[in-house]
Image (cartoon, rainbow, N blue to C red; front, side, top):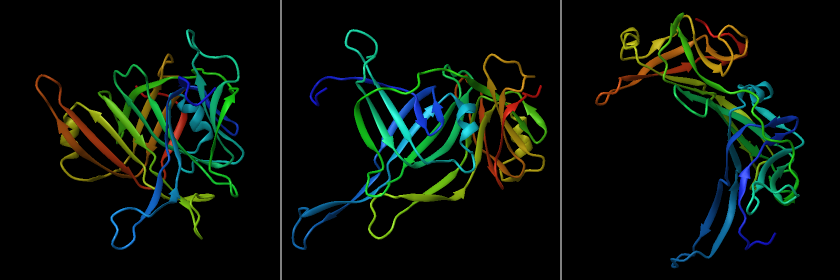
Length: 297
């Protein structure tokens, strides 16, 4: 492969130590580079440009929610200690994909895998999605990651389980009219740099601010909450249904706050469409997750 040739690629499973994410929905890379631009007094043109900060981040979405969250803590993330690999599969001219070692991988030795959020909507044709971020670390004098060409691929695409919109249990009341849900795990990971380092070799979680949002239609909920901030008394649980399995099976996902506050942040109606109300829940303490829950009825 030469640089100037036309080549197209598709996304492929990602591998982090012993965790393989087979059901990839999207991949995006941001270099997050900050640079100094230096001008001499009396000159309008730059005289020097240098890299100051590099916080590379790879953002992914997957439908394989339970597999990922079975290995990646929603409160602590996952420290990758031996291998993080993002793979891109080269398409074949006049065919589908190449079967030879002509693919591209992004490889790192060490980094942090952080779960960001889960989201779903009532009539989504893709199902619920988990958003995650991988931040590769510098190891010694090596860059946080390298790009390798002409590579073979590890694992294979697959769908282990798919989830969709479920109900919410709000202060012991089952809400059956949920249109959208979002769980934000709120992990604030901060990389460490010093003594002129550009890329971090380590880092730590400094804050956790978990939140939930859901949209519902029964305006008696607005009557119950009112226009201000309300303290939680019994707890709130969001459910994500596993597709193809009954409510009474232990295969669904439940995410809960036992303490915190909630408020109605928005009420919107337009034309002939039904009115939606959005509720935001802010947790006190850590968020709880159950990957083998039943859906209440």
